[in-house]
Length: 196
Image 1: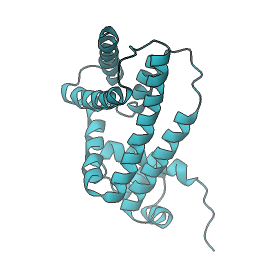
Image 2: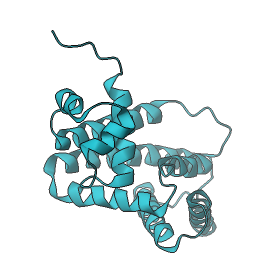
Image 3: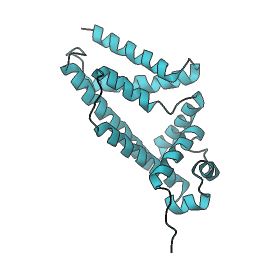
Image 4: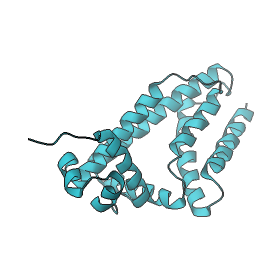
């Protein structure tokens, strides 16, 4: 008879995702996961299957969490533009050091070549883009943005700005990532708001 699980799989997968981000999707070992989760490599393999399957499960959980968080109503007194900036800052919170970005780029290498992981990653981006698009539409309705802007174009530009800014920050080590990103996004929105 199998032993009863003491710790929920989702809690373990969240810890695993942090290890993968820090160490890299190809570089992490089951020993790294043991140190973080407290579970033996044999137990991890028994629960999740192969090392590759552990990555899939962790990304699936990240997608689920993102969708759940984005489906919550906005209860803040921020403008819609401030809410968009806040979302990108929250998504960047796990990058506290340039090495964390290197781990993320390591995952990208696999994303491009692994069909299943690529599909999971595309889903993750799709969830985020839909949320950003909905907030941009609301921002236009509330006159936070000029009426002539194209929401889809701005959404893609924001994605490029966010990802490119993270890489530039990692390369330059220019202060805190949060401050760096805030400046980039505020500058971007000032530029498009001023272009009537």
